[in-house]
Image (cartoon, rainbow, N blue to C red):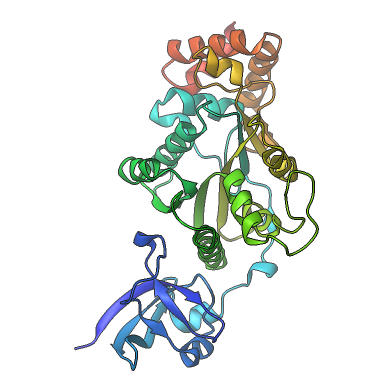
Length: 366
């Protein structure tokens, strides 16, 4: 009796590929079915496609005999999808209601730097300022307010205990390469993960990708690209960030289609010239920034968000006219104070109100 399997297709140079398991972060296993080039060509399969079919015994191990679905579609429907370069990107306009769950940090993010389907956001953080906790809270909040979205947490060169924590704590698909794995593993994980996300977008799905971090992603690709071109100050290869830029830039809201939302952390103030260069390469390429402040973190004020430096472009598309006017009033008052006073004041308002709607109503009465 034939067995039905599902996996993410990772193509190789021979024109075929293997079905890899997301549960194992695409790590190769002997039991991974081989997908012959004939099937790839017949159904127009691509890197990152989620392929389901029946397995038969091949000469060197399990082999896919036929294809029943691709990314949840029939093979014919998959071939008829609109390709990535033909999709029309528009401004994000459907806000994630992050604050509805009552989490204080998420209520503040929703007021200061709201996120929507298709947002390309960066969490700019010095070490130990709380970026990982914010990513964790985001995953939980988005899962609660948008249960139809697929949430992927991509951890590159991460501490093994952090990987375990995310897998146990966060309601998301966690794809991780830990710090004890080699550079090639980091790179292939990132490439295949984003190939899958791109494929899902072409099929009209909504995907949220949380990346920790762009800095470690950039370092991994820099080592992988070593010697391929000109080396800049700080030891960064001139072409090292080409693929990381594509990964971050994949975030978009598609007209009459799906969306990819990317929220990625980037480290600053590490003392590394390379880290500074990586941040500079991504600075200004997003449409939302959550900037964390070292002095707030050192004073144990969390979330350590710099209210003046944080924000989202075209946020007027995400709130009603009335709420936008109240938000602008609130922000004007916040930026007149120093970062610590501003955040403590906002925290007090959040604690005094049941939700952000009540908070904004109170602003007009102040």
